[in-house]
Image (tube, rainbow, N blue to C red):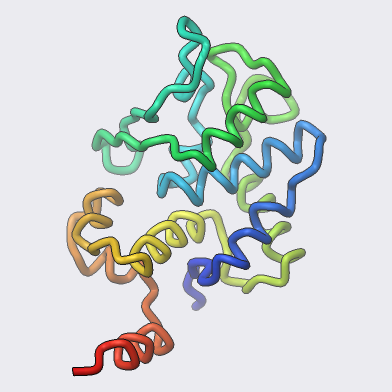
Length: 192
């Protein structure tokens, strides 16, 4: 059985982000889906259920600073900052479509509902396949990629455990998908 993997290189992350960088509304939606997954560490079900009022303050006519939600799987509250990459993608998407507050960020082409998990998987798999990435890339890879790169940049696993709302360090450690190359790099770096 194969395990969902993070995208390990920033070059591959950028290739995936840019795959849908075209000017059609569907491509903009698909690109935003990938950018949102990579930059929020949210589960795909939570991402797909986001509405524009979750990210945009219609009274002040500007993006919010954070996404606030209750995670569907855990029932726990989460607050995620909208970083500059995500803000830029959201603004570009917003200006292109002028959505209503109750519209979903990732609306289906067939109406007012969001796309489903299977469609999100197809969107991500198509981009990964066309970019020559592993067969083990899925929706959950975006969540794992966030943690993997945060860890590689020196973020403590305990902080990631809190971000992910994991109940144990073992779960977070599995998410990081540490492989032999990562272990080797530690031994090369630490020279006492």
